[in-house]
Length: 220
Image (cartoon, rainbow, N blue to C red):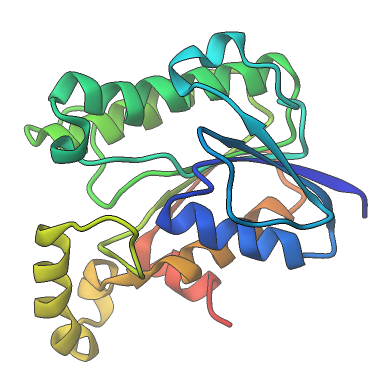
């Protein structure tokens, strides 16, 4: 196959894993990454596009790719305010999805979060839910939304809350079965594997994967 992928968030935890998998996936012959700064990675299939995410509207990129992977995300602490958080977790993905829709992209895949709900009283979950809701309003051939639980992996940035939560949850993972399985922490590489597998399916419409489904699909 001669497929092309467009990746947003390649320097992040899930995005970085997704990039590594895409570069080894034989079905993809070109992998375009939209980045603020050059990645410390070179590969014959990798094409880097240095951009400003605040100016996505003017970005010239291959939005018509077979699959657009949106792995963007931040925290309120890192963003500095709720407004800035919303710009990254809502504004950027919706702008990218709009470009993908108007360019007739094959699929748009989004990393959301467990508990995403447009009506949630919790700001984080509400923004994630609003992003999902408005994404589904766009004329995209295929939408895949992944809702992972707490994400494990080697982050470049320090997130004290997530480290504490991960340390607390790891000993309990074996006990979290059936209805509680979706709350188990999940590794970034597992999410990335599931994301790439979903991108290779010949399908249309909307698909939402909860954390336990991501874990099952993303197994080695």
